[in-house]
Amino acid sequence: MQRPPLDVEHLRRALTGTPELAFYTGIDVIESTGSTNADLIARAGDPDIDRVVLVAEAQESGRGRLARAWASPPRAQIALSLLVRPAGLDPEALGWLPLLTGIAAVDALTTTARVPAALKWPNDVLIEGRKVAGILAEVAAAGPRPAIVVGIGMNVSLTADELPVPHATSLLLSGATDIDRTRLVLSFLTEFARRYARWQESGWAAETLADAYRERCATLGSRVRAELPGGGVLTGIARDIDSAGRLLIEDRAVAAGDVTHLRPGD
Image (cartoon, rainbow, N blue to C red; front, side):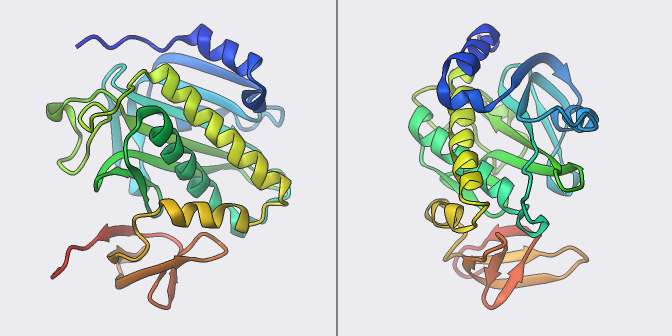
């Protein structure tokens, strides 16, 4: 299978020539790295670095939630991180940033790849119940103008033999109409910039994102099992998302956890 490289010049021209993408101050594409998130976190000490994007053709030591490995064969995935400094955002509302990223990913996949993408709270993107992308947000620098790095790893042209786990999928395997990674990157960055700008203009109001997230979230209304930090387990119907982006399972708000959608009888 031929896996062409990202068109770096096209990406850079788009960022300077497209009004919505002027949101970003720069984009770098590198051949390989351990983790794009770690690379941007290392640069967060420079207060002038904001709204920058880093993409790797291959990622050797990518990390998901709970320190899970996320490996990417060369040019088969999108391994992308971006750094933003949401000045004035209440620390309790930081949980909305990965949820916003998920909304952007679903919208990009729906419009560009033409696949029925949906969200699994808090940070997975699914196609027909199988994981196609994962999101990880990390605080790189605290303070009144914190630096947050958000990374997304997306399976694009992986074959069935290359999938990291049996419940994963790729755009190729899901019958996507477009698996051009350059177009997919630009589509995601466009959707992220739109959502982030509206959120900021609203004064970081949760209502700006909440309905959009609910519409795209396959977890809501499902019976789920949440494995909680510290070892607890909570089972019940996922009812809603609260103002802090926490999942409401029955009458309990869950800020973090490993959520499994349960089948009838489980």
